[in-house]
Image (cartoon, rainbow, N blue to C red):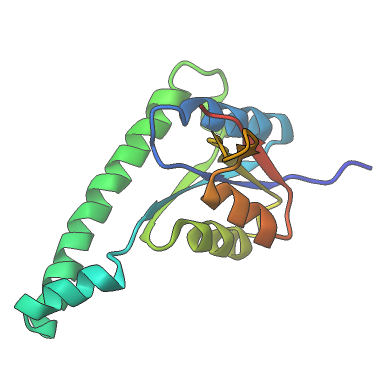
Length: 162
């Protein structure tokens, strides 16, 4: 008996090579009649960055600027992810039967992908694996894809996107 796939988490950076990865997720979702949860992480400002800014601004002002700025960025990115989704689904048959939810949050990418997969009860994670070559010519997987594949309990489909 084949495992059931009802929910697929698709992680995206919205980079130029992410469309083929999304198409794999869509194809799987259509094959298994599964829903897709698109995940896009907004990288938080580093502690070093906060320390520098705190040197010039009071902590309360920094928190206010951060929260209002992050709300604007999150809104813009939500719109971009929706546009990406809509462009990719345009013209496909039976699109109305495909559910694609969107999660855009400020978080470390690996943590957001893993947390979302756990929260939604994902049966699979689809992520691009832009690899690069290491010192001795071996291919190295991108850090996010590597961390997700090491720390999840569900299958991960790594789609080359370079």
